[in-house]
Image (tube, rainbow, N blue to C red):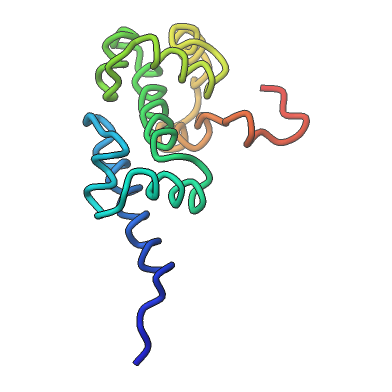
Length: 144
């Protein structure tokens, strides 16, 4: 019987971290806490996570938070500040900066534009159609 492949074992741990971020994005998560949860060092987790998923654990967490914020802002019943705290961010400035980087406009601009943008799109399709596109993911010639 052969020993399990250590790379596959590590990938299982990285998926656990990613799943935890997806579930607990509202919680105060940091790389050190995530690493402790899978018995890795914070530095090793960051390097391995980036190698496996193309971004750091913190970047992945912020992307999940911004995606959820986009949904809440489209709803229109919460202020930008309320949305910021609802998705687990503790700094309105950091939230607004990261939102602008990922979405291409400020949260308040997005909220205003989204009130018209999503008209006619069924709720079940809105997330897929209106998901943020990072600059590095945009196809050449993408003009959004």
